[in-house]
Image (tube, rainbow, N blue to C red; front, side):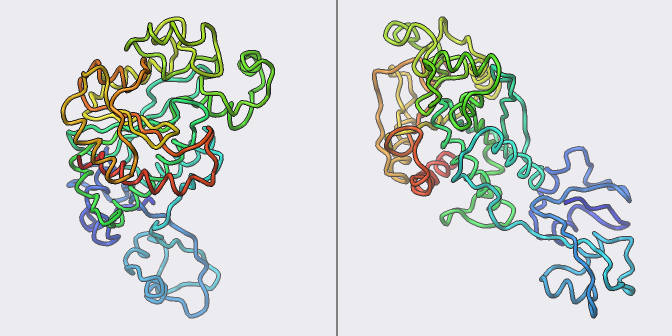
Length: 395
């Protein structure tokens, strides 16, 4: 919600007027000097919308504010051209409305269009969330990273490395929404005050690593050469529910130079709906973007969300640091998921991250069954995963 500065206004006053922590208003206005506001300057207030209201007989600013339990001066701030002593019946004013309910509905077919819609809404409501395009998919779709918080500890989450595991994006986005609600409304999540983590942790999120593949699974093949290629790789079958790869048949989580040669030897030798590691490591733009992001951000901890199995893989060739065991044990405690240190699988993002950076990296396998997991599992998966999200912040 935007407001225009009046004489005597301050960022601190807006924080008190709207009961929003000061830091979120400051961070929502990065180009503004909080100590030198100019009359008429636009200031963004996070976690609020302005809603139109039609004046009825007997209305006054006091009555309208009292009925909605808002400060009367918030009405004056949003309606500076309105004379509160003369409110004509039928006139339109704006009323500040605090956002207290979740916007994101993860329990639906969650393709890149749904993701972009939810991102647009969340970024409008919570402008202190920073975004960066870290690269583009094969088809040119933006690969978006979100950053929340200002801490020196950098924690990274990602979802949808595999196309038919798109439910991971939905889970991440729904928790992100709940996190933002808790921050701005001074609420807890499972009894945990999350506000300190905004100052202690910088949270890096890539909610959808493989947007082309997700759209292929959810929506079917696109018109044109990319769709034609996917149909050819899929042997003409229009059912893409078993598709894990990117749009040109490369498995993005088999693309990393961490014993990649082992995967090359035993996996498909040409583009395939799943498991083809490419002709060389790091040939695909999505995989390259994620490698460059790890280098740029220097994550202290990395969680890659996949499906399925209700297990957490946390080791790689003995290169994982000692704290990885402590962290994964906490993940097990809060989720019930089984930690597995080693598995005969290589070339994944977690493997490469541990090999290169010697920091805690985890592959979290959500749910059970056959991918793509059904909507009937969403609520259970979400509840199981909340504890892992929180523990990744405080561990």
